[in-house]
Structure formats: structure tokens, C-alpha cells
Amino acid sequence: MMDGRNSLVLVVEDDLQTRRFLKVNLGRCGWRIIEAENGRAGLARVKEEQPDLIILDLGLPDIGGVVMVSRLRQLSDVPILVLSARSQEQDKIEALEAGADDYLTKPFSTGELNARLQALLRRTMKALTTDGVFVTGELTVNLAERKVFMAGDEIHLTPIEYRILTLLIRYAGLVVTHSHLLKEIWGGEHLHDNHYLRIYMGHLRHKLEANPARPKYLLTEIGVGYRLVENQAST
Amino acid sequence: MMDGRNSLVLVVEDDLQTRRFLKVNLGRCGWRIIEAENGRAGLARVKEEQPDLIILDLGLPDIGGVVMVSRLRQLSDVPILVLSARSQEQDKIEALEAGADDYLTKPFSTGELNARLQALLRRTMKALTTDGVFVTGELTVNLAERKVFMAGDEIHLTPIEYRILTLLIRYAGLVVTHSHLLKEIWGGEHLHDNHYLRIYMGHLRHKLEANPARPKYLLTEIGVGYRLVENQAST
DNA sequence: TTCCTTCTTTACGCAATTTTTACACCTATC
DNA sequence: GATAGGTGTAAAAATTGCGTAAAGAAGGAA
View 1 (cartoon, chains in turn green, blue, orange, purple):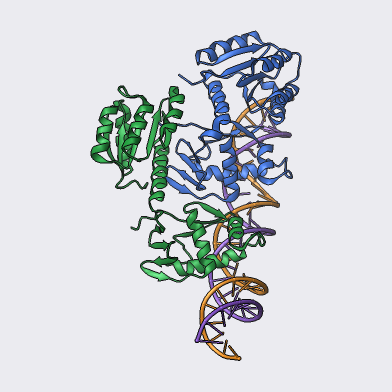
View 2 (cartoon, protein in one colour; view 1 turned 45 degrees about the vertical axis):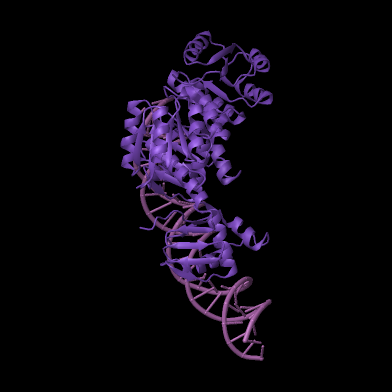
């Protein structure tokens, strides 16, 4: 199941059918929806309800797409996903320049919409938590104080272990390749010796994972590198 | 309807009837058309008008298909769609290897033609719009995170499987020839061993297709290569 | 020095992946 | 129908890559 729980999405769209489609499908994925059928109403609802995300149709009857985006931007920094018909290629580019964060061309699939919405949320979340503390599931890393906690207990990491972890945090959710890790931690020498990595990942897992044989946070991407899982909403 | 506005298409085709058919149907879809009835004229018009896309018949009276493709390639990087009769199986492969981007076998439908032309155009614009997520139908590939989803479930791919898939995504909607795939994945050695490809395409279909025997996404182009279907938008 | 922590090196068992091998299929042509 | 070319499946064997344990080496602090 996708993870859009608790997130409030405002749909600004004049076409009833599309609105209904969005309501049903987003609702099914756990998003909370509010609606507006024109630009004026949309702006009002943003002030009232402070949504976490806005889906904006570019072809509104009362306010043009670009204008709408910039007005929304005056109100808040909420991520905006723009919907455009095929005939509005130009509008869509202008909308992005005016401050929209992503776009989707009609018709689109539920899967695609979901993927985009989550990517948007994740991007903005990440910016928020950049106060020096990284959290995923039961793992908390205080980068400012160089402290690592697992399920409340402070964990001592050696310098190399810590550097590996912070590198993974910097690219949380993404795969960091063997060569990237090796280069960053040991310098350009042992470039083809994944051996060290295996050992240190073993150490990290031993310290951070409840079951090192079935890691929840530090995942192996065979033949490629390692990945630190992000956004593990703790149960 | 479809979006070919502003795009200039050069049709190089000696057969009057085909030319007329293309002119009417492409015009109706919003493409702007210029024509040439032989290779020499075709080359001239490319220099004069700099089209966005070329449709090239392989059976021209004055210049052979392969030669024509390479001459065009000397002039520009414009995407080339090759038209071939059933009897020209071999020619079409050579044309692709000479630098053509896709092919269509006569007779073809307007819908097919349009889809191909758009895939070609999109490919040239793709560098701009790639946000790291590829979607077609229920298949979602997050290239940034190196994750693959089918109908919401994450699918694990092995390194080779993933590389094949991403190569197909890079040319989504277009054919990728056997030799292209082999060269890209295994290097210049096993160049005539389609065997590996069959096996790995089998694996991919097994993992990504609901019914591997009747693939919806990973299509076989007999004698040529494979094609990943794009833009399967489920309203 | 001795103790302690950390890093490096070595060795080995296991699992995932790739390669090899073998065979069944489908379609078109003769 | 037989045959051949291109194709898809299924399983093995071989290879590679991964994880663990444990012993030696380097540095720092008491």
C-alpha cells in the first residue's frame, strides 16, 4: 500500500469527471482530499485549510494557469503538481517557471500520479528535516552532535562506520555505488575492493539492525551498492 | 487530437499513393508536411528546411536505403523513421544499424504511425523532461532510486535485467535491435548470440508481465529486436 | 610498557546471479 | 506434413558476489 496517509491534498479542477476520478483513486491510496472547482475557490481553500499538496489543472475557467501558480506561491510554499492537457505544452513550461514543482499530462494513470505525489512530498519533507537530524524508522542520527540512536539507545560508531552512514544518509533512499563509497571513504585507491565495504556494512548492521541477516535499513543492491531506507514510518 | 503541432515532417517516398496517404493523415493530426519523391531531392530538402523528423521509404529509385540513412546522418541528427515493405526485412535492420531510429512495415495504420512519430519526438525532448520516473501502464520505474514497481508492488531485478530494462526505457516506444542490446549489455563480443536476450527477456516478462506468453509491455520484433510499449495511460 | 580501540588482512561458507545446456514452440515455405 | 529459422521455457552447472568470523597490525592513552 502506498503511503499518503495524513496528507491533505487540494484538487483544483473544473472538470467534474476528472475531479471524481482523483477523489476516488487518491482516497483509495490513503490521501485526504479537498476540492475546488475554480481558481478563486482554490485560493480560498488554501488559506482556510493549508493543504500539504496541491493538484492544479491548467485550464481553469476563471484564472489562467500561470497566474494561478504565482498567486498560490504568494500564499505558501506548498508543492504544486500541475495537470495539463496535451494541447497545453507551452503553458506547462510556463507554469513550472512560475513555481510549480511537477506536472502531469492528461490522460495519466493512477500509478503515475501516486508516484509523483510521493516524490513531491518526500522532496519537501527532506528539506524540512535538514536541521541536522536524520530519522528513519527507529534510527535517529543527530548529525550536528555526531550521535546515533537506535530505538532510543545511543550507539557508538567508529569513524569509518560513521562516515559510511552519513554518506548513505546524504543519499537516503538512493543506491550508493560501491565505487562511490570506496572513493569517498578510502580515497581513489582500493577502487575495486568491495571487501572493506562488506565488512563495515556488516559492522553497521550488527550495531543498527535487530536482525543483521535480514536488514531493515541497510539494504544490499547486489552488484551495485548499498541503500539506506528512508521514510520508514515507524509502525 | 494528437499533438504534432509545429513539427515539420519530411516524407521521402517515391510512391505517389503512399505520399498522398501520409499527407492527408498526418495533416489531419496537425503535422506540417514537406515531400520529396527521391533520395536526391530528399537530401536537398533537409538542407533547405531542417525538418524535425524524417519518414524515409527504403525502396527509393535513386539511392539505396542504407546509403540514404547514412547520408542523412551526415547532415543532421534528425530522427528517422524508416518505411519498409515486407520483402525488405534485411534492409530495415541495416537501416537501423546505419542510424535510423525506428521502422514501420507497410501496410501500417495511421494510429501506429502517429504513435511512432510521437515516440521519436518525445525521445529527443526527453533529456529535458526526465524527472527520474518512467511510467507506462502499471509499470513504474524510478530511475533515480533504482526501483521498479508493477501494479504497486516493488519488483526486484538483477543487474542485467535492470540494465536491459533501462536501455529499453531510454528508447521507449521504439525498437531496440538485438545487436544494440547485446553491445550495450555484454560488450562487443557475443554480437550474434540472441540467446542471452531471449532468456533475460523471458525473466523480465516473468517478473513484469501478468501473462508472459502474451506480453503487454515487452514486445518482440521478430528478426529485429525488442520494444517497450510506452504511454499506456489508464485514464 | 600494557591495555584498548580501531583498522587491515585472511579465510571460508553461503546465496544470488550468470552462463551453459537442452528442448518445445510457432510460423512460413516447400 | 516435414523442415528450418527464429523464438520462448526450464533446468542444470559455473561463477561471482556477499556476509561472517577471527586473527594480526597500527595507533593512542594511561
